[in-house]
Length: 366
Image (cartoon, rainbow, N blue to C red; front, side, top):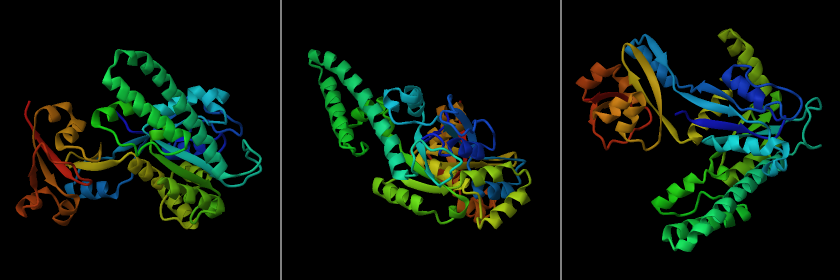
């Protein structure tokens, strides 16, 4: 199962341009009119991690394999999407299938690129999208409530609890409040997750700016940053147009030269990838042998057997223990053998919680 981050926003804000640059492809059609994207495009993107190559060099591995995150290019939403405007129902269904939302906001002026409204106003654009997502969730909740109320005549306490939860969420959404701060018992959390509400998904704002604003942002992106801080959301500033140009260059030196001319040390898309990765509460662990050094993705607070299962289900079923070295120790002592001698290799059992950067060798028996 992959981790999916959906790219959403109004039409013509740069979603497809950003997606194509991220995936270094031309999967998504780019056009100066709404709804050029109908079916969502999915691109698997390697997560940049300098640690991976360092470990591979130390282990003299034949292969180096990164971990990945999926980005999904979803068609532009418009006002009225929750009632089906602009094929809205279909597009909203696509958003329900992702784990997190990357909301692209237009923060540039360009008379050659049309906008759904006459003025460039990022906060209005954000409000349009969030309102439609909220209305879609309210409809989902009302349908579920109607169903539960019919069943509640049986006197089932669990159903009454679920009705109470839905009414609390409806109240939060009606007052435009975030719904991730409701206190619930563990079994009710399972019910809450089953509702698959769009507004409960973690959100990242991507400010798509002009070339001269790519380093420090502009007045448009400052408004978005203020809102992001207020909502406890993350923000990343990119120029999708610049990134698409860089992605088209095949020669690595040419890419570096272009970045240097722009005053950038690395592509800003790396920030988007890392922000999406962090948004999903993901961490990376490594396996490192002469055959291959590989990065693996798990959610934070994952126990060692579950992490072993990412490699192979047999590893989880027959888990015995995990020989564990921290990334820092592996690098400082230049490999597994020296770590063993120095006592830096730990034997961790089934209760061990994986930490970002752990280098594992799993022992199992099936």
